[in-house]
Length: 239
Image (tube, rainbow, N blue to C red; front, side, top):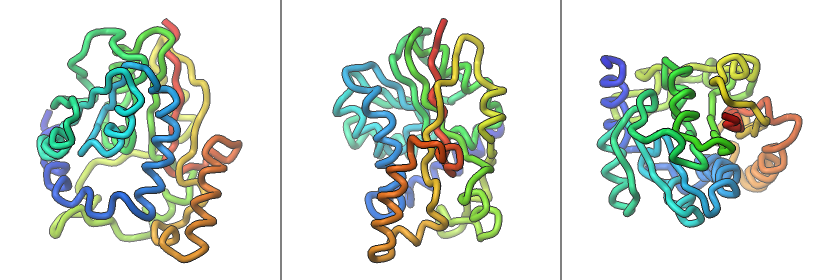
């Protein structure tokens, strides 16, 4: 729980800056790619976003879902999500406050990389998913250009005084993801976000940015997807 408190404090601080660069350039591309994976599965469905943040993605998914609910550890993030009129709750990915088999789709983007007990989080996501439903679990991938950029470059800022280095971060390869799948689930495949983008700044370059963005959309569901910096595991609950 001490780590949860530290993570909560980190994201409460981050909440003041979180949307500073959202909605354009690189961050808009990443959000668009993630939404393109979740949206077809969310149509007419009961949906849960684990780690909904300020609700940027949940707001878009809610437009096509029968019911869309979000959960996040950070009150600061949730304050902004509630201002969007979203149905969101405070809680942890490792202890979801929902009944078994409550949702058709449970997804998590940009969050599971900061959860130490990843196996427990995946079990919880599978538990609240209906049999036959889908879990979309996004990981940070060590088999990627993004991993190299993170290792070689300085940590990004999340406020005037804090950087990304202040929060626990894990990287899980496709092979490792296969090892930690919960019982009663099957891996149906991967979607790769940020496969060829070397740095975020590339997306802002004239002409080049548009070409790279178009290529990222083409590679999302391709043999190259397993090289995505953000690797989305498509997991089906079978029992």
